Image 1 (cartoon, rainbow, N blue to C red):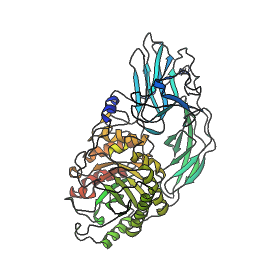
Image 2: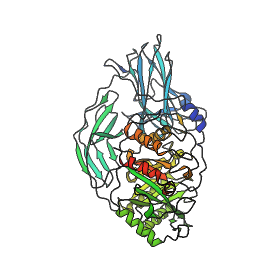
Image 3: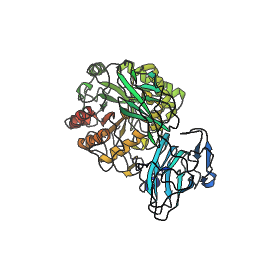
Image 4: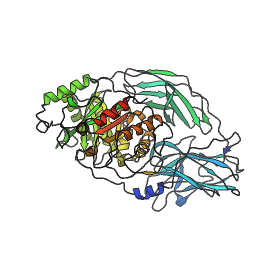
Length: 565
């Protein structure tokens, strides 16, 4: 977030990857018939690399992490080698096959050559957890074998692959037998609760490669292990949960249901609504309407006070109200206005960073200083939490440590938000994305800034330019499928053309993007593979620029967010 125009920072190496991405697309796997089977041999790498060949000795098998069974492939790119591991698979002519694999780690590609028709491939950026890649291909009239491959990307981290499947008519090559639909999981229990989350665990199911968690009959997350934490819940509320087991053959029946009740929050302002609007309030005069907290539109559920100031103590921050620039606004009036907003059900937090923010949390000492100083501001001014808007780099290890320390002091009612730039959320290996995932159990929402940005990759591997519904939805999809709960994802846009150097879109575009993600309607050319009805909402820079435009942004976007399913 910035009162000034930001500099656009392009991802090193983006040009090469984006160019490759333009040729790639992700499509859903075709339905198999009862006679179909997995034609890949040693698909789970349980027999080492038997049947597989890896370039430049780049591949090996490991016992952890694995998606299923006891082994998985690990392949490491080095120099000019992209760690390509391949297998020749027998197929039938004039037949359609579903190609899939579970992957984790660095950039990973999955594809097939020699089809006799159109060779296909798909890919994913870094993934901190197992993710399934899938596509389909059709063989030519004389095609009896194809080459299936995985590979990474030059200079990127090692990738892992497991449970490869070339599912379709029997090619006669002696592939792995077709799986059967697993049974329903047993032993579902509630292992923990907070004011905003419920932790679940259950027994493993033989033959399952993954599990889906349902809340009130709606799927909310998918995991590869036998536990999950569902976040973004309301305090003091009862929820019903069920789990299913999945594999290539399909999904089991739902387990017996369990009920869990979240604990009560402990901060002023009541419970954050299911769908929320965040607005940044400017503690300075840059030509936008000068506001007091009391003057912020009631459409805003979270008000982020911008910004806290760095001190000479590493990691520590303070807050200095710009009374002179705000027309004589006093500290006592400021505190009273915060209390009044909280009494009206709003949350008021302090934002750390901005374009000119110089706060660095890079070791245990600065992490402790950050947590202690932010907690002191919360006690002094009555803030409900903190927003992380550091635009000059973030150390995931020590910022995560600082935020967990702050959470232990503030309690389960802490409001924790983030406002990364688009480049910060392209990959789960990026510092911001890592931090968000590290503190997922205490994170409220990530409102990425979809402005002042260069062109970026969407979750489908295509390149999108800012200023469209597709830019918002395809980039949000990376977070939604990369490990964050839908309730932890919001869309950040400028309130007017004056609020950013580039990237402003009308409130109609914002609302269409929200509809596309939450309901599957009003999409552009990109349409997500599933809907996210728990999507948290939207954010804007700033409430002041919104006020300068007659509060047109909040008047249009606010009611739309609050009416989402």
